[in-house]
Length: 279
Ligand SMILES: NC(=O)c1ccc[n+]([C@@H]2O[C@H](COP(=O)([O-])OP(=O)(O)OC[C@H]3O[C@@H](n4cnc5c(N)ncnc54)[C@H](OP(=O)(O)O)[C@@H]3O)[C@@H](O)[C@H]2O)c1
Image 1 (cartoon, protein in one colour):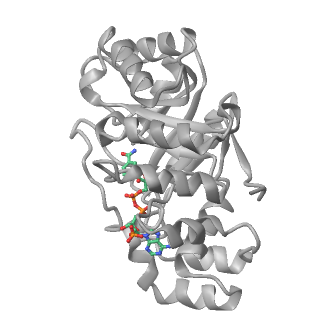
Image 2 (tube, helix red, strand yellow):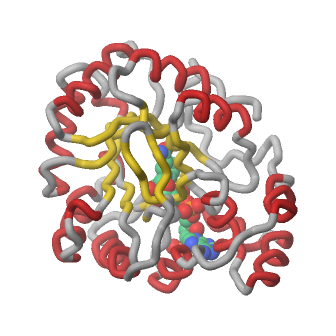
C-alpha cells in the first residue's frame, strides 16, 4: 500500500498525519485491528500504558512484517509514573511489552501538579537521551501548561495530543502550539462517532462522495493537525484512511469550524488545578 500520507513536522520528527487509535481495544482485540490497519497502510499507531494493550500492539507490529523504520509508534506515560525513576522504569516496561527497543514518541498522558513538571520533564528527557524514544511530548496540556513544558524541556516538545473534532474550538491552543513549533494531535477526532449524524457533514460528504467521518478527518488533516481515529470495524479502518483523494474548499472548512460550541468537549477529566482554554 503506497498512499502518501502527509507528514507533520513535530519538534524534530515527522509524524504521519493519520494514525490508528487503540483506546478501549482490550483483551487481545487490538491485535487483528492493528494488523488490519498496518495492512491498509497506516504507519502511525497510538497506544498508552493505561490502555493495557501495549503487548497486543507489539504483537500486531511483529506479525505485520512492516519495517520498524517505516512505523511511528506512540505510547503515553500514565500519571502515576511521573516521578523521576518511576517514569524511566515504566518506559522500560512499555518497551518490553511492545517488543521494541524504542518508541517514536513518548507522551505525558495528562498534566499533573505533583511531582513538579520540571522533575517529570527531566525524567522524560532522560528517557529520550537513553534512546528509548525518538521524540517526547505531552497530552491534554492547555496552552499555559504547554508553554511551561516547552520552556522546561531540553528536547523539543513534539506534539500536544488533545481532544479535537468539529464540536470544539482549538484557536488558542493551536496558535500557541504554532508559535512554539509544536504539532497538535487530535484525539476523539470523530467525536466518538457523533459526527456521523451531523447534517452539515453528511451534506458536504455527499458533494465529495465521502462519509461524514471522512469529511471530518480530512478537515483535521487539512489544518496540519494529526488525526488518530479508532474503530473496531475493519471496513471503517479502510474508510478512515481513504481521505487523501479529495480536498475541502475554504468555504467548507469554515462551515465545519462553525459547528464548534461551548459544551462540545467530551473528555473533561483534567486535574482541577488546570483550566482548558476558553476557545
Ligand atoms: N490522550 C488522551 O487522553 C486520549 C483520550 C482519548 C482518546 N485518545 C486516543 O485517540 C483515539 C481516538 O479517540 P476515541 O477512540 O476516543 O474516539 P474516535 O476515534 O473519535 O471515535 C471512535 C468511535 O467512533 C466510531 N467510528 C469510527 N470510525 C467511524 C466512522 N468512519 N464513522 C462513524 N463512526 C466511526 C467507532 O465505532 P466502531 O468501533 O463501531 O467503528 C468508535 O465508537 C483513541 O483510540 C486513543 O488512541 C487519547
